[in-house]
Every structure is written in C-alpha cells, then in structure tokens.
Length: 203
Picture (cartoon, rainbow, N blue to C red):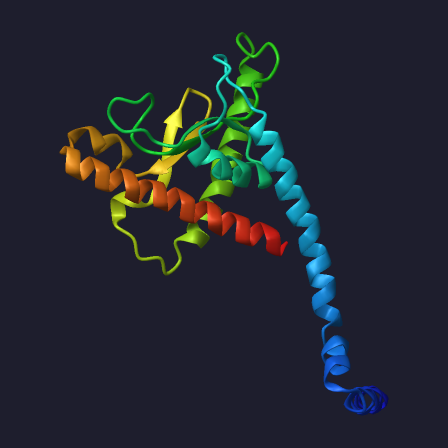
C-alpha cells in the first residue's frame, strides 16, 4: 500500500508539469541507457581506430570492405588473424569475404603436445561462441542456403574462417553467377556485422 501511495504521488507530481517537463521526467531511465550505450560506442570507435592501423607483412592495411567486420569480431573478443573483403577475377585474394579467427600461438608450442592441446581447446571455444552468435543471427532469417555464414577449418589447431557456405564452389560459376554471388556473400557478411554491432551497443 505504501508503494502504491508513493507511485500515485509521483504520478500526480508529474501531472502538474508542462508537456516538456513531463517528457523530461519520464525520460530519465532512457538517459541512463544512452549513457551506457555511449560507453560501448566509444569502445567501438577505439577498435575502429585500432583496426585502421593494422598492417600485414607487405605494409598493406585491412581491406576497406571487411574492416567493420573485423571491428565487430574484435568487439566480441574474437582474436582475428587475417581477413579479405572478397575480390573478383584479376584482383588478389578470393572472390568472397572472410574473417579468420585464430587464438595467438603459445610460446614454444611446436614440441609441446600439452600446449598444442590447450591451443586447440581455446580455438574450439572461439568456435563455440561464434556458433551461438550465428544461431541467433539466423533466427527467422530468410536467405539462400549457400549464402549462410559457416566455418572453414584453418590449420591443425582449431582455427577457422567465417565465410559463406558456398564460398569454395564459386570457382565453378559463370562470370555472371560469380558476380551475383560475390555481391550476395558480401551483403551477408555486412548484415552479420550490422547485427553484431547492434547487439554490442545494447550491452
């Protein structure tokens, strides 16, 4: 009864305010939410700047078309090691986008079976977490089966690439089919990236 009395007292107090003041009164919880979101936004921007500085052995940066995907993966603490935005014939790389996830190699792992086992387990844990995100992403999503993102094994210790299921079969396509799938697979990676970003900013 005391709680109800306090609630009605608050309602009556708000009712005496003008329209703009009422809006401000009811908007307090939303302001807190925006404050929390701004922390995540700053984190996203920091990761974007970090990715902008990444260079490979040839002093080349990350492909422009896959940068935000790399940012999204890193926002979820996936250790990315390589990536490609997808390039058509005459360009370097593969015609489909992909991001590789591989935990950093442990020191002196070559002759140490225990370290190799631990490294593999860490990579499998990354796969497990990624499966959870993909499962959520594909709930009620209508997309051609070959465009769905899946894993392609990399190396002997559980590393993997996230890429469309039909990626490896693109070499069998005609030029027109290749261009269509190139665009479709790029869009699928971009949509997954947008999903990750939206969920990240809600945290």
